[in-house]
Length: 116
Image 1 (cartoon, rainbow, N blue to C red):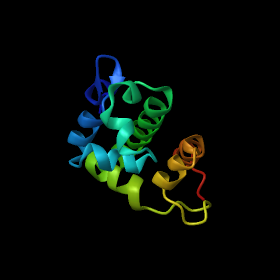
Image 2 (tube, helix red, strand yellow; image 1 turned 180 degrees about the vertical axis):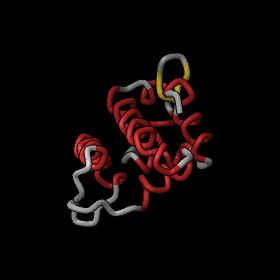
Image 3 (cartoon, helix red, strand yellow; image 1 turned 90 degrees about the vertical axis):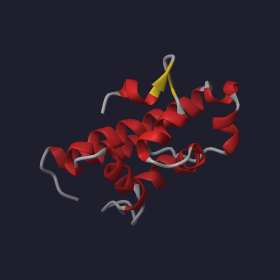
Image 4 (cartoon, helix red, strand yellow; image 1 turned 120 degrees about the vertical axis):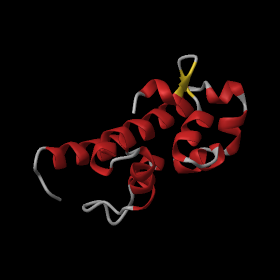
């Protein structure tokens, strides 16, 4: 899915992301380790931390979407599938811990034929 579908006026918009994933913006905030405040106040939505976390989640989901056939199923994978080599943590847990790059590297390794 195009990144533009997740954005509004050049920023990642929690409500648009939530709409695509058929959930609430509060759940999106929890999924990336942010409080409700971060997605309700305009100044907090624009903050670097909020935008970075939203971008990381969207990039990961977009990267695995072709495997699953839909953004909704890719989001379910992001939230619930334990990743081998990460002590059973999910992509969501790793993003919350600031390890989105590790998730991207894991996906890239899988794409290259390296299996965990």
